[in-house]
Length: 178
Picture 1: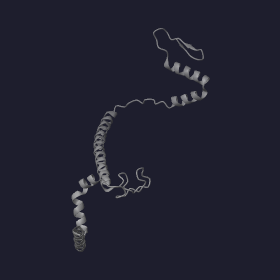
Picture 2: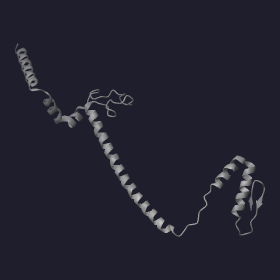
Picture 3: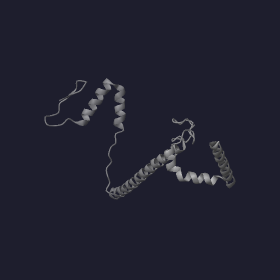
Picture 4: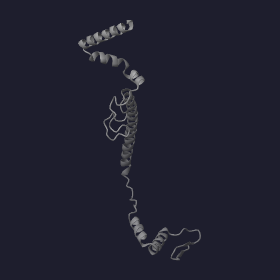
């Protein structure tokens, strides 16, 4: 026995299930009486219900073709996922190397001083802005740094530096002997 809000009782014969169409129409009538706005929405949803169309016999070839295309699409998606994981890993490794280089040069590891809205430096973190990490700098730039500074110094400047160094040492020796 099924009782609705409108006190309608549907009592199917024993062992038989009530008619679903009759139950649905009775529920819609009760809904219309209790909440007309919700009943209108339910009617629109019921009208949009998809009614299955009969399947023709020619669809077998079409289904096989679609299944093949779906399998190929899954293979391409898997390949793209693999490529994306590699790119993501490479990105993080490059980001870590750049952060180490920034620390070695005393720069902001997030933006290198190029972003005024950077939460770390507010755009002031160019190389040399903070004290560089000497150990990291020696590890990353050690041999390159001495070669680069020698290459930038002209021969005449090197000679002048040697003369200045010799005069300073001679003056220091004179002071020590006095």
